[in-house]
Length: 170
Ligand SMILES: [Zn+2]
Image (cartoon, rainbow, N blue to C red; front, side, top):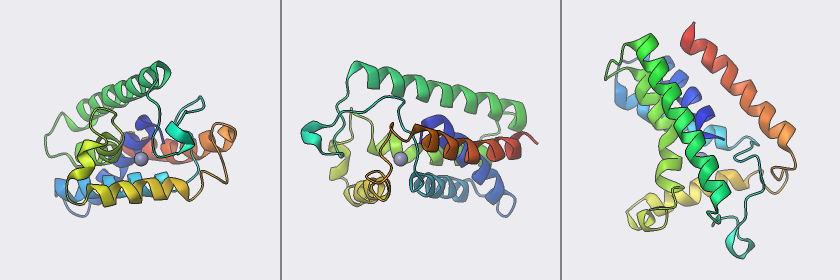
């Protein structure tokens, strides 16, 4: 999913677990879990066809188009998070919302950023995490290739994001 969807869903999940425990670490973990669950549903990551090295879906080619898209999406996600955090949680540092959004963003930040995505897999556990993250996308991405199935890949995100946004601002 796009970063903006991940942070909204992660933030809502953070608030939900925050009603049970005010522990920000639990909200962070729940945000990470929400990311992986959402990645298991067919979704659009980019509006254009991504290119891969050797046709292997593991290694995207970071061309100008992909950079512009990823930076814009991340910036929108970040600004939206700041806005909601200030408006509804007064920038409270331990707000489960804020830690949930971070958890929602973290898997792609660690695993998919071109500057360190390869090197970081040398850290214990992160190679396995990468295999899990990619494996979750591979559950559906050959059956519903994107962007060919963009109506489905967009509808799934709207179906998740709108209720989460409502839950945050209600
Ligand atoms: Zn992901």
